[in-house]
Length: 219
Image 1 (cartoon, rainbow, N blue to C red):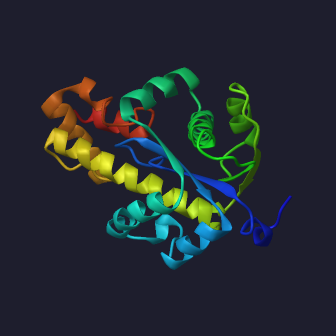
Image 2: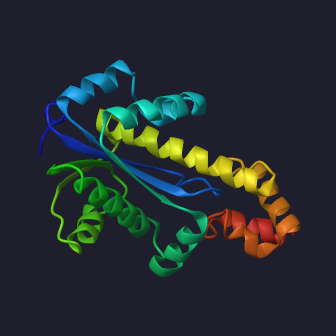
């Protein structure tokens, strides 16, 4: 298994997701291909874990990363997310499915045999999802994977896409859909149901969250 030090000298794909803990909006998975040369560009941009960067800065950085690095973004909108979750009934399996799709899309653009992702479950979940289409890749899963610039770049692209799509949903509903799963999110959920009916909730929210029960109990 390569060490953190040696990974930075390798061509590799970083994968990360955004929206997993957000009631409203999509689940977005991004995969980014990084070489030692493009890694220097990412370092100059001060790319780091998206959780340590403001939303505004993320939206500014994302176009530069997309210019420098081949990438793939898979956005699973709330309605599709709910359909997949009802079928798969397991968040880790759903994440693995999304990771595999993002990886396969990027592997159509680049040749790479190494991918790095955050530790969220059994790595065989991703590998099995890939093998269905005959893709083989060495996968390194580890905690705090965002310390690797390839994964950090993916985290920024995923978050930027999540923010843009959440903003679009908010505009469609003429109301602000907050991030996360806070009391403000519950309030927004109740407003959606009151204004548009219960069925509309499935087009903007991840229904398996406990928040759904809290929203529907109060409406």
